[in-house]
Image 1: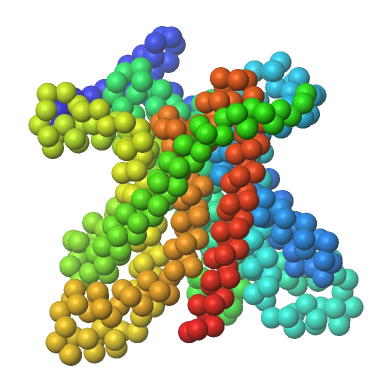
Image 2: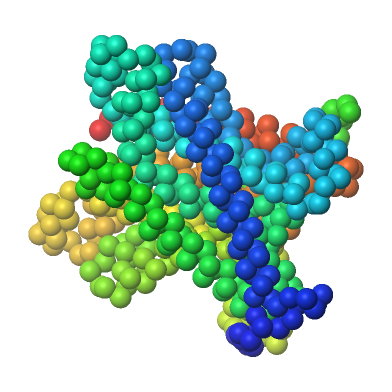
Length: 246
Length: 227
């Protein structure tokens, strides 16, 4: 292998002359984190709603929740990305108008957060459902027997426990989401992987650029892991799931 | 805006070729990943500390970076590696399709490793001790006693992972390999028929993956009853 390593390349100026390559990588990181953060909020909100309705006794709500999960789980994420960016706007004229008139980055950002948010929501819905169903049935019955309404049972009895149970799986889902956000490069969003490839193409120092991205992804994964472990410790119910895991 | 079915019908032969590559890639990567992943799992559970650590490091690295980035790594690394092996003057052309197959085997191995590790660990320790007591060596104990059971217990999980792999192969789009989605995308751009082509691809994947998941679920309940 005869590849000339040159780590100084990060301090060279980019072709347009107003930035260094390390700034490209950092701005890529910022977009990766921004997309992941917004998509995560969407995913958690929708995932909770669809996870909850799948545990109710109303058949049509359960069917709706199941359909939601199957729809987003059985289409490759990349195809979903293309659907949000190229296909959905064709059916929603105002959206298409906005997407063609605004800066491309905003249109890409919107498509990416919708795509990643809904895709991840289906996976979180599955985990929330499993979390609720792992609780003893007696808890729901006891709540109802005490005179709580169905909504109150979920709010005060079932969900506080279910969310604590699913924290470990939510952690891996969060890391999946951050990794999956790299797929947004296919619609041109200038996130971390996009920027590292672009830097490689301009400088031919592909391996330095990919190394930087790799190290950053590993650092993000480790940080996310620590943060979620902290959340897990802080929310643990003494004597129940305090030992970590289920 | 009308939905033009004739675009899809006319491009079916080309899409079929792309689909065949998708299936070929999925099957090769699943089998290769399973073999390599099983060896990795054995290494991770080995009592040789350096071997176990190297395997764990490989698995954790592969699992913490996006598949897209791994594809890029190998797309640029593979020609240089081949050049190193063959000792030729210039990096030999290898092509996106073959690069993708090697990448997927190496990437999926990390995921199959974790599944097989759980499978191996689910086998009672006494069985291994009994095998050694009967005079079997490590490879015999693994090959005849542990792995057949571990594999059997994990079949549903392995198949589920293969369905995920089937969906993930669409990412070869980023290195311009012509899989099912790649073929559809090329026609979509040539004929400016993005809506038809992408909706068609989505529906095909949706139906296939739904049916396959349903079959795995049925298999799972049958395996569960037998045990």
